[in-house]
Image (cartoon, rainbow, N blue to C red):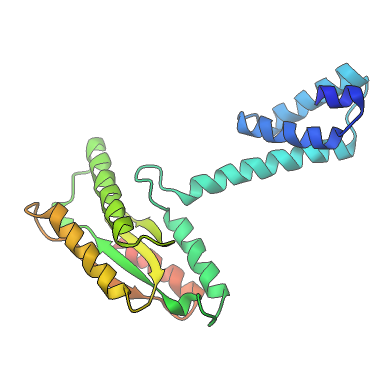
Length: 214
């Protein structure tokens, strides 16, 4: 940015790059503005203009929001999509209405871990539970290899948002077989079922909440 200011070329573009870099480095908005003012006063003996400040802050905010969105899309313990991301994907489908590819052409495949075999509430067992869900998610991705969303729902369940087509039943059977192979001899069996989507977007939100509490 200093080079662009000295040469007088592509100043706004350089400000945008600087805003992105500062956001990636974890600089706060206050630190970003202070650095911008210091640079401008050192090289130009004046405060930065409105256009310059806007360019830096726009780039900083877009980069920061992108990072936060990425965090909200993934459950940090399991690597699965978060419930919030699954909710967002469902809303996208409902906005398509009755068109092909909309919510009416999709379903949820739900995998429920057995409650009787649940780890305790100790810190180490929270990690154990998360690893079991992560393993379940990996098996779900083996059975559903297209662009399906595989998400964590609450403490005991994994859900797959997938197309409702003539291959859905076969994929669910494959998933059951994979799960039975992993969970054999470890206690109560894992439950797997196909959950139809309700007719409205708010109804889908209520369904996810209900499934997550189960």
